[in-house]
Length: 477
Image (cartoon, rainbow, N blue to C red):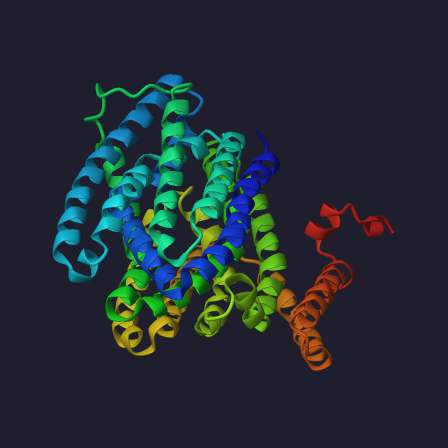
């Protein structure tokens, strides 16, 4: 299936995920309150952190290896069996550690009922085998399944979560969504592959790859997932609620571009296997163009109207999330660059050591800054830790890419779009001065920004992505 169709299906899934978040999160934020949202966020991110150890690098290695073997049914079943067996071994070890931690750490014992419920999510995250479907490029199936399950989840949340004490029900519903996805995935995979223990002991080659990229994932988590857990340990659930809210909005905005990189990675692995370097380079250039075209204005606009976004999505009582959100938002661009370099260049080229070295830099930065800033500054300190770590990691990737001349980074494209972002500041100033009403100011600024975006991209930058997207006839004039 062409990349364009895969991107559409993956975008549908990602958009549904974040549209649902936009629908559900404002509702549960208002119903549950910042403290209970903080509790759920603390527990959920702790489970996600343990899940990283259970999966190690299986998600990344799985996509790459399945993409390589998808044309041979026997080889595909062999790869699938090895990866699933390895997942089972790692998950069993992590589950034992998880139970011990729940029983011994005081902050975890306070919410042990929810942590026990979270066991189901931990197992589901391990065996959801999304790597298989991405590797064989079954994005249509992923999109349809994901949308149906999420729609049922939304309906249940609105029917069952109706008062502040229903945060346990909300968490159970969230866990059930992952369980249902996993069960459907495992059953449907039988259409292409069969699991067999016969060859599972031959996992040495996979184990090394999984451990290298697993260490990368775990080290990366020290400044991403671990942040929320650490904030919950040294600060209050209210501070966790502020940070969780700011981070949620950032992930919603970053999500669409992540959909594109998720689609492209298996295709890039296939192109390199076929020695098709020209198509490989062409897709890299398109990726950078898409990133810079949309993310630069999104970052500027979202920083400017952060107070309005927070109030609109979360209601009153979340003013403490405004500054963390403004600090975090530049990461949409920074992490976007990182995703291109990692998922489209370094991993397909098997340059895993560069990825590992970068994650070590991010890990040490994250650990040091967490200790220095989080206990004192709470959610603001955690936001600063995240931005600092991600920025250093991305700069390292850029340095290694430029040093080895693997691909060309379009610096001129970045410069032009940064200069093109200046008018948004002027438009915001005039809207803020002219309109005092919340809705009038917000709608006016968003409308003016949308018009400005197309004027800059079409008339001044003559951006091929936008021109081709809308079949603008100015090309022929």
